[in-house]
Amino acid sequence: MAFEKRLRAIGAARYHDKHPFHQMLHGGGCSMTQVRAWVINRYYYQSRIPMKDAAFLSRCEDPQLRRIWRSRIEDHDGGISEGGGIRRWLKLAEAVGLDPDFVASTHGVLAGTRFAVDAYVHFVREKPLLEAVASSLTELFAPAIHENRIAGLLKHYAFADDSALSYFRQRLNEAPQDVRFGLAFVLDHADTLEKQDAAAAALTFKTDVLWSQLDTLHSAYVAPARIPPGGWDGREGVTGALDENPLRGAAE
Amino acid sequence: MAFEKRLRAIGAARYHDKHPFHQMLHGGGCSMTQVRAWVINRYYYQSRIPMKDAAFLSRCEDPQLRRIWRSRIEDHDGGISEGGGIRRWLKLAEAVGLDPDFVASTHGVLAGTRFAVDAYVHFVREKPLLEAVASSLTELFAPAIHENRIAGLLKHYAFADDSALSYFRQRLNEAPQDVRFGLAFVLDHADTLEKQDAAAAALTFKTDVLWSQLDTLHSAYVAPARIPPGGWDGREGVTGALDENPLRGAAE
Image (cartoon, rainbow over all chains, first blue to last red; front, side):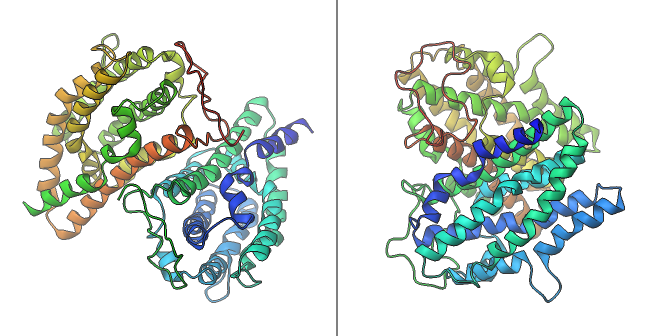
């Protein structure tokens, strides 16, 4: 179907699997400082996903749609005591030699990461439901990147094992059912060209949110690194061995 | 007074006059493509300032405060036919060889610029008035950068003349009275340590908004340039001579 093809072409052109930072990460080219910076900043994205989904629920009048969508919050937050995506991400943080409390404080997150992620939360809070659902469809492209990431991290990094990577394995189970529902919803509700344009723009916006996070990370922590004022210095919250040559910001 | 000193120290440590992109721009180190990219992206900031100030007015119950603050919208928007900051910025766009309609369309603006600037509009829409005012106090540090910019652009770039630079000259007249009011308001209303902390955090946030815009620009258009997918390519909307060697994105 032409519209589904159009949505998939957005991923082919713009999804962040093509960003040079991911190529470094999955190919073993990252220093531990760079891996940690990625874990710290990507945590901010994880931490805002349930808030984004709660914003969606808060605007959703159909109880059946709320019931289906609620599983996204459950997947990420887990229960009072049992695990969920956020706790699994903090397992990864521990494995790469970071204090999980430091990561969870979001104190080391770059401003550019906050701006991009917060833009996503605001988008879902403010836009029509169709566009909010469409913006979640980057999950169409996620299983491939998760498979590559698991393989690449296991191959290249000593910290990588089943416990450290449990977040990604679990997403391979969860994402396909989420995205099956989301894609069917968008194909069903985008019943005019105008709505299709809006849904395509929403998915494009979301690819920008993901790409911008990696641009910010690359700019701060890959040579010639320019850590912004107040940005994480490669040392705070580190419990493992420091890199021999931690990055320094040009702005200091 | 200690609190005013604390606010000024935030500017000394974090204001974007210290960003390497500004040093390139003011020192004559930018190509015309880089100057144009700055003009296109910075236009987005200019275009959102009156919306930010309207968000402030919309939450302001005191008519006298609204009357004073309203001049900021008037300065930027101007009248139906007479000029204002936005039209002056488009004069600069013309002078650097850009189609002003292309610039005003914001079609060439980087996603990272949008995320940073929109974060500022959301901040003013959502935070207590004291923090909204405090976030405007980067104007304390603006006259020095405008003076440097006028001198640097006149010295190094053929496009620079009084008409092209009228935006900055006019801001030298407007900003001091705005900031006198804003500083007095913040010093007067931040009457507990908790409020002082919140005001200082708001000003810090705003320095991040400005710095992040330049990081995004630098990352996209300064070697090793990584123009994000869909980012302006150095050609669209250009009416002047193209650089001999326009930048190309690594992501293409």
